[in-house]
Image (tube, rainbow, N blue to C red; front, top):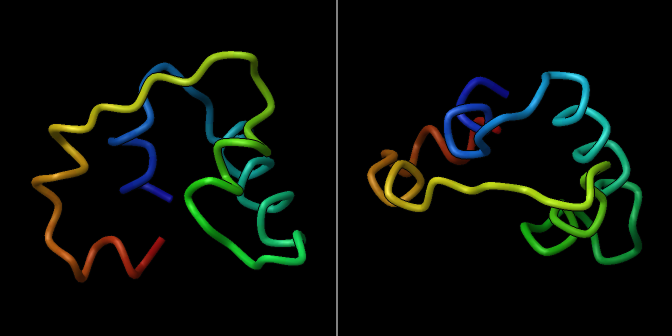
Length: 62
């Protein structure tokens, strides 16, 4: 969750949790697109530079 908080800017832990929970319940399973669709706000800011620089092991721990 901390890693996701670094990548997704201007969000609350509750918004992140809700987006992950709803996305995980979808038939396609948890995915980035599913999370973006489930995110409980009309807009989302993703820091792609931070996401790109994360070590692969931290991404798996989300």
